[in-house]
Length: 157
Image 1 (cartoon, helix red, strand yellow):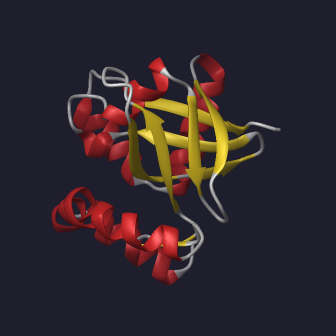
Image 2: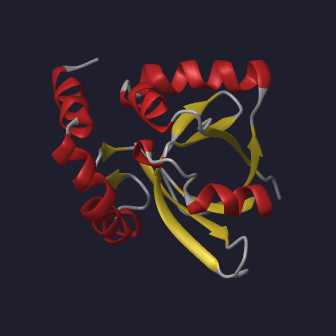
Image 3: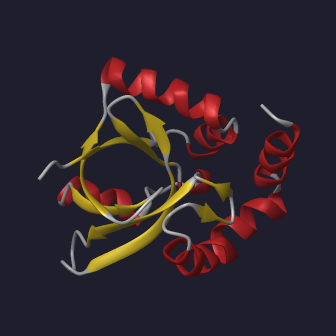
């Protein structure tokens, strides 16, 4: 990990960083990501994408900036909700309607989400914690809730 990444992670794991991540960053990212073709966000280059899901209850489109982790089969999205006791709304949307649109490192593309379990989840979780150590702190904070881990695969066509 480079120095600036280590410093960024340390700030993100702080109380102030967490508050900024929950309140300010999503607003900025919804403005910045579309204007940089999905490449730049508050978290830096190629770390966050805009994920548009279909509301589980409303059926309406919902767009959220999410940290995305590149995986051999697509992308990983971690439903940590900053360690809060409940799952994030976007994760309920993906459980109900797995099809989504993601703007990340380029123009928006169609994806299909899979909620991981068993060994696939354990492997993805290890990758997520390696990407951002704060996920482990979030896991401890929200216990006994198990954080949802999704694999997002591009839809060809």
